[in-house]
Image (cartoon, rainbow, N blue to C red; front, side, top):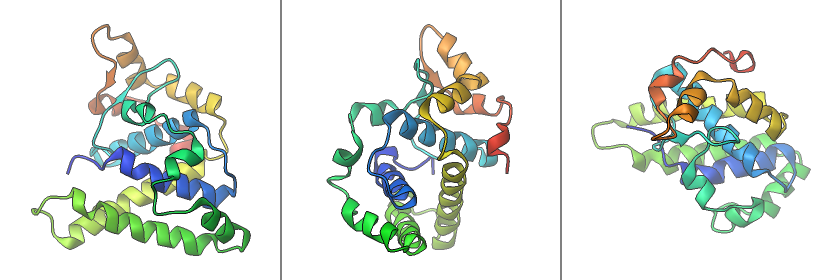
Amino acid sequence: MEGINITNFLKYLFAYYYIDTGEREIYRTWVQKILWFTHWKFYRMYQIPFFSENFQSYKYGPISWTVLQTQFFGIESFKNSQYNIDEILDFHQNNLVDEFKNRLKEDFLNDFNEDFGETFDENQIKGDLDLRWSCFVFVFEKLKKFRPKDLINLSHSQKSFKIAAKNPHSKVIFNETILDDEEISILES
């Protein structure tokens, strides 16, 4: 398996953000950086990409062009999701955050089962997806209070970003270059 679909993952990121914070507004740059640092951390830990697509260097740091092209703006990208923002915020207001987060994890495990080929058995698939979910939650918890500008600065300090930014032919950040980056203290396990 070479990573999960990033646009399908967005609904989980949004839902997790809404249930965790109880807020409706979410910054596009913040979303891009959470996606990047989740992918980055997972690749550093397992040498396997979290997402099936590469990130590219951009003046605001690593981005997913696929996500950028969707032109999502908070709630609008959530319209076709199985999750209703008002329902999520009700869970938050009624102190049922953990229950909803457990539901999200179960949905994630079921949803991305299809991204694996027939060569994986059910335990391998569940194990891989558990690792992905745990990595996402770890990164989210560590970076959720960071402002977009702080996350941009953090990503700009990475060697993998700098190499891609200097390449005149391609701005793709190759996964292998992630291994050359210094560990980010806030994301140390």
